[in-house]
Picture 1 (cartoon, helix red, strand yellow):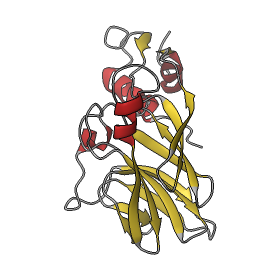
Picture 2 (tube, helix red, strand yellow; picture 1 turned 90 degrees about the vertical axis):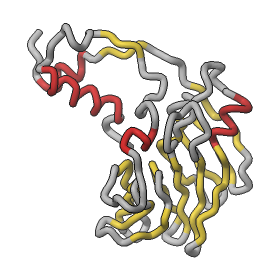
Picture 3 (cartoon, one colour; picture 1 turned 45 degrees about the vertical axis):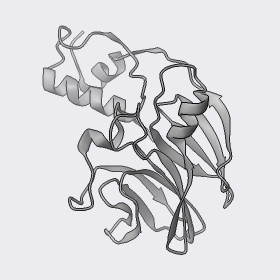
Picture 4 (cartoon, helix red, strand yellow; picture 1 turned 180 degrees about the horizontal axis):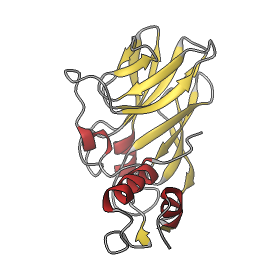
Length: 204
């Protein structure tokens, strides 16, 4: 479970930079539709020629190996050994130690088809299971603007995984054949920034 969303961390950094000024950051702001970050890993363009982050996720495998979703290169171990070349990776989840599910976020605006997908990695083979932008574009479960930014995956077993798409505001169940079921759609809400202000000790 992630304790803080990217949006929360971003707001924290903004507050630190602005000195908690109420003039620069209102008490209530509309939720950024993409609850993770607006334009995926393109926010910091990733490439294999510039390794070292951004890092988006950690996952402990059954043998206690810690896997890292490093958007610059792919899935690595905690010590930097490359397990699967998958630039743009945002999350990883394993079944045993020989099978991994991974999401890739957009390398550009989430409103366009920029590589948003779910992958399955097994025996050194990396296979795209589902193009999640195409699903969002065709079905648009929340009925709002077309936007896809898959940022978290949880393996249910070797045949299925759950994916959170923060651009599409939905939770998806995807099987190894690429069939997608919408499990839940999340409403857009106004989110208070007061908890961030309290966290960094802003004056009342």
